[in-house]
Length: 119
Image (cartoon, rainbow, N blue to C red; front, side, top):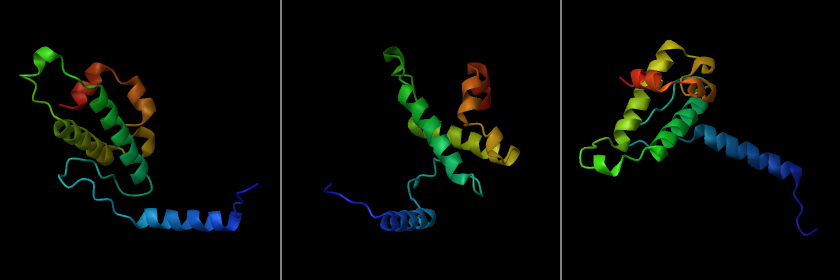
């Protein structure tokens, strides 16, 4: 056994990291494109779910080569549209149970429902 972990030191480090994470303000949205979360304890989860949805859609969205010249949809358009949807959801629901970007809600979403949500 070459390595030994001291439980009290691990717990102390975890507490320090948690405190720093709670106090840290991440400046990742200098352009104002992204959702910054509601208020309350659900904020971090809502931001994480928004980012997951945004990245999943952005990753799989590849316009057909024949559309490239006419396609003007860019990342910022998608980020802003989803941000507006998340903010609307904050106003309507306020709970994570009904949050639009919850995986169980997204798994039941039809193409038509997604289109109408973004209009």
